Length: 265
Image (cartoon, rainbow, N blue to C red; front, side):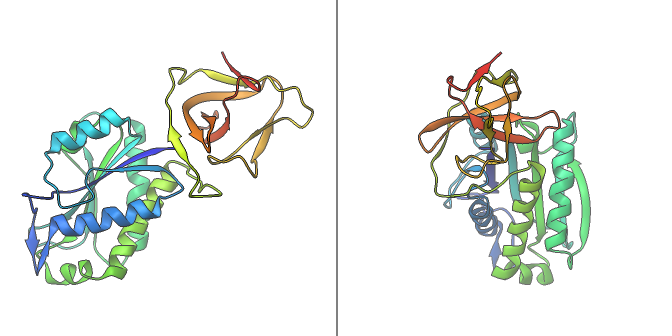
């Protein structure tokens, strides 16, 4: 599955900003956990922290880089007397995927919290954006030292909307589909065949099934003999290996990785 790294900003000895009875480290962790729950069955999620823990910025980015995350999302709360929502990508050279994903994320978040001020899409030289080796974004979710914003941040219903916007953005940007059974076992295996073509060698008249999610039921379509797409990664799904593959339009699908049915060329 797509690997999403969620970083709840600050934590432990670093409370972040504070105001109106709130600490940034607490609100960011609440939002991060909500996003994690919403992505269950869509993606494999790793959290920088799940408790009130002290972590350096480098520890966070190294953890994401070493894990091989497909996306890095750092969640923060703003301060300084303003109001509203804004997000950031690195102000240096970035991939087209970084830009397009941020555009989708921003739009989906604003859809959920349309009543607050949209402060726009911005760039900055933040360490968590500069030191990550995958597309990354940092979101600033209202101002903790502005009473009207803080009142919203105290509302569980509002935080649900913030989290839903973040989750919707990731799902849309990466073309994710929820697994038929979200409690199925998905384990990243990894492969040195990434980028190579995997083809069907199955000669049955009904063709080889492919799926729009990591599952073995309800196929999305079939390949004939010799048809196939590019290998993206390898996973174990309910005990059996599946390739995640990418078609010519960049959409991700899943097929068996059994050498009885496919070959990589």
